[in-house]
Image 1 (cartoon, helix red, strand yellow):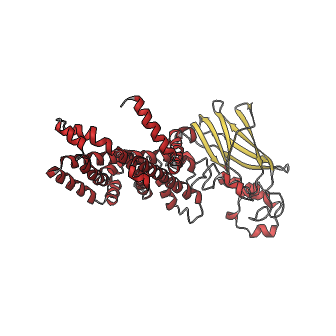
Image 2 (tube, rainbow, N blue to C red):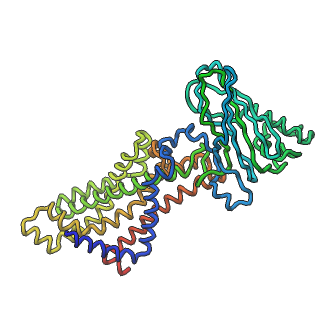
Image 3 (tube, rainbow, N blue to C red):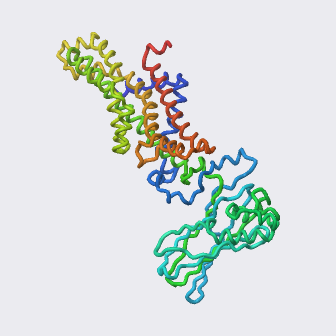
Amino acid sequence: MRWEDFKASLSDFWFEFRREKSGIVGMVILIFFIVLAVFAPYIAPADASAHWRDVPYWQNLPRAVPPAWTNVFSTKKKPPHLILQPASTDVRQMGQITENTFVFEYDFTYDDYPTDLMLLISANITDPAKPPTLVLTATRPDGTTVDLVSTKLAGSGVGEQRLLISSLKDFKARLVGFAREYENPEVASTLEYQLIDPMRILFSEAKEGIMTAKGAAPLKGKYVFTAKVYTFNPADEISEPKLVMAGKVYGLLGTDTLRRDLFSGLVWGTRVSLAVGIVSSVLTTLIGVIYGVASAYFGGWTDEAMQRVAEIVASIPVLPLLIIIFEFYKPTIWPVIILMTLFSWPGTNKVVRSMGFQLKEMQYVEAARALGAGGRWIILRHMMPQILPYVFASIALGVPGYVLLEAGLSFLGLGDVSRVTWGQILHDAQGSAAALNGMWWWVVPPGLAIAMLGLSFALLGSALNKILSPKMRTL
């Protein structure tokens, strides 16, 4: 085909396609998912997929919190997750002791309280027998300064240390002691120590009710946290401090019970779903088309033998077999695609075979055979071009089934565990009873993504079927 003819055919196709509104909608949805897949390293952390099951990788995020945009629809504003950089730093040398001072400022303007307080710091500790000492204080908006904790840093060597301040006994004891100065003694004596939330005390007004769940109101304003790290060896180094305020909302899609960013999982899962759906559908359709055309063209005992093989493959229960294989061998994504392809082509073969019986009786096929053309030439040059419209529509309509199959296998815990997929996200949500616990942000986005991707290909397939199949245009 000449380039001019190809451009003319493409122009005619686009003219017809623009008239199919469902096809345009499907294309827009598909382009959205393709953009997510292609630009995943720029939209989400580049190593999020590789570390999806690495629990320590996500420990700096809050646990099981809804998306940040839910604050727009809530009258009670929840604090977002923030990582504070030091507003100022200072280093003083006092003989063998080095005082590293880091000041963090936090504007608290919310109606709820942060869940955790964490300090991240890079430390080079040369002598484990002389670990650095951390002293953390907080100056509240009312001018009161509270001593939060005094503890030693652990370990030795070079690396980032993560200190969960809010989980330390010293942190809670100091804040409870601070709160007793304002709380009603009778009320304070009846409270169970284990149920007292020190973070609520830190961010509440200093008055009666500061220790109770529904007592004093949040104290809004600027909080100044001062972290002083004392090292006792001149060779020790303290750098890159960060103060993490674990909020009650985070990101675009929130987090799960393992603190993982669900938006990152959804973005990287797009790649797997598109790869599985498109590659499986293309391979399945091509195998079924070639097999069906060859069977119809050669006919006779060849056709009978080929169809018996196809019927045997079609009679195999695919899903139970895949479940057994995946349970024992735990394959990666490409063996998953190959296995689904090997057991899914007989349906296409049946349709194409019936079309092949009609095409091989056409006059131009008879003329080619009379001129001495071989079977491969006739199949590739005369029969296959007539079947291509069906091939394109079949590929588009077949993608949703493979996306759902992969998601179903992953939902059962049988997918590729080395990659994050939408089905795996739903599997983890089901295992943590996310729906029962009201964590809708863990269930709805991956389920909606599966439905929307399937819908896009269904709309495209329907439009292609109407455009490329003349008989469908009158429907």
